[in-house]
Length: 345
Ligand SMILES: Nc1ncnc2c1ncn2[C@@H]1O[C@H](COP(=O)(O)OP(=O)(O)OP(=O)(O)O)[C@@H](O)[C@H]1O
Ligand SMILES: [Mg+2]
Image 1 (cartoon, protein in one colour):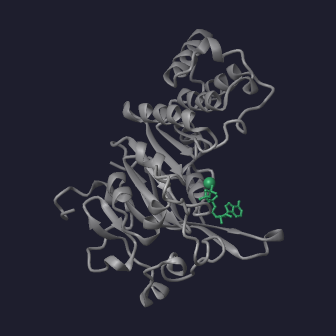
Image 2 (cartoon, protein in one colour):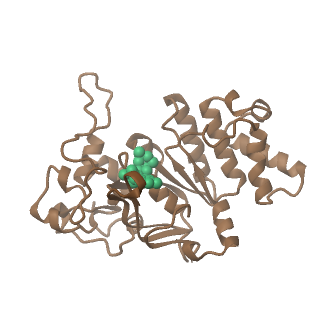
Image 3 (cartoon, helix red, strand yellow):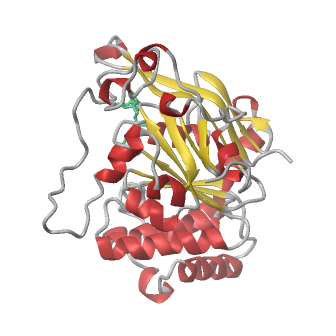
């Protein structure tokens, strides 16, 4: 069976500087990743600012076309989809953005925000069914319809607005929700409620979630599998338990070490910023992390590392593991389904 969504050798670059005459930034560099049609669950995409997460999300949603490589949805190349198929994809693949306020028109009440997609996609044959769907969607994300409907966006809290956006996505009867930093603008108490709403959705039938974040703690809380990106490339992938508990790539090790701990004696240093940041210098060849890597070797400057399987359901693109078997396919999602016992952990 074809995967629900698949990215094969996808790259995307942007021109920079005034009038686009500056250096081109390779925002996503040869990423192959797919989401299974059968397995729901939450796949995390993590990396620091500028690592290409949002660009990857836009490519996944068909909002951007890659410069090279192919994005396919339900077995069809997005690049060649007819408008009816593209419309179906737009309905089934729903975004949730970082800033819930930006998605609202301040002059429309919440009711309008929720009713619009049902009208656009003709999902409610009568006003009564429309009202029923809206009530159910609001309740599913933990909102009280009586307290939510009839209000303008500015009359809701940030957490309520973000939940309205999740309800809106649900009303489209999505197959995949791509949530790009959905909680980074909310305070900690609201984060938990939004994340548990997402988790509840993914545990029911039929909805897969891609959770994009720079925050490994929330990724650890809700994801099944995770992909770590650096400078547009995938550097590590695997089950969230393995990747965050036992990171193998020097970049992920730095990321995990920078997680602030509940230890008042230990100063939080943030990321070790020695070397060059990814947006400023992207290696045209070799490993993208070489300029910042504490374990850099000669080979890292010249050759791009393959993904090496370091344990069951865990692989890292790093020459430190070149004696281990390389992941057979370019598609990193293969790592998520490696059976236990293939390689002892
Ligand atoms: N439309 C654009 N035009 C030019 N450059 C862009 C554009 N979109 C992204 N970029 C560049 O591509 C790189 C990746 O950006 P992207 O927004 O995908 O990163 P990100 O991982 O989502 O970062 P953040 O965590 O800050 O949201 C960055 O260097 C960024 O400046
Ligand atoms: Mg982003």
